[in-house]
Image 1 (tube, one colour):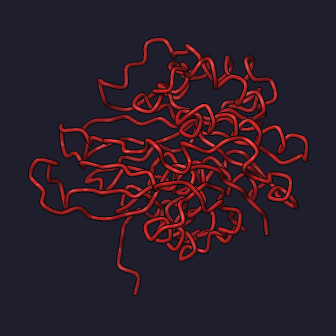
Image 2 (cartoon, rainbow, N blue to C red):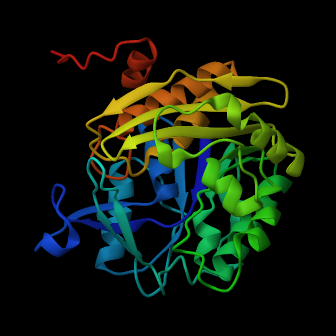
Length: 344
């Protein structure tokens, strides 16, 4: 069984029921999740030895978050139980032409106040096969960025494969540094890089010509080849560079696919049309988890990419942050069965 380590923050997610706006609600639905913890949950669900590393307060709310991870078979032994509070984010779910809205309340959280030296990375990476982090963590604070860099360098020294989802979050970069001042030093230690068109532009100034995702419809994967090539030239350690491709016809209707470039060949996955979206939050995380599982399980990049896209397509049918689907369900969709018939 492959050991995979993810590092980041799990948060309390509060959402108005259904499609209500913040101004309409008198109650919130509670979910625990976050970019990196969502990946950990998916991988545990696929049968991987999934370990989540974070800094979570020793209080009742922090305990609820840890219990949620344990319930999903994620190993929590390496979590540092410290800090004043758990981060929160509020989600207003959009519909049709009204997009979803997120409000963060993460200042002073355990992860935003983490410092380098608080985590024993050498012990954590013993016998590990893979380490995953996202661009959300270094956006929280200088201390979080330093701890992330410390983890990446240790993983590199110990021969652990490192992946990142660039995950640009405009609302989080508030501590006086721009992404292009922080991210290059982190990404240069990565073997696998995932990012969409906004991530590449905001972090590194790269943009595919002639692409405007705000106009909806399908997205041409070949249009992103130049960006993938530039990313690999900028970060030569990366053996594979991947992007997800979302055509946003409306908040309730998207097209979804992805492409992978290995330095020679551009692999393109089948495209799915997703209507009546239940919850698109965590879609990229479910793709990353599917990709990690696919690259560790299958013999070829095409199958790994197809698995990632199918897994993340199914995530859009699951309420909450995490993708609670099985390998069998993903493989069923990969085989072409999208009927949704009742299993009796």
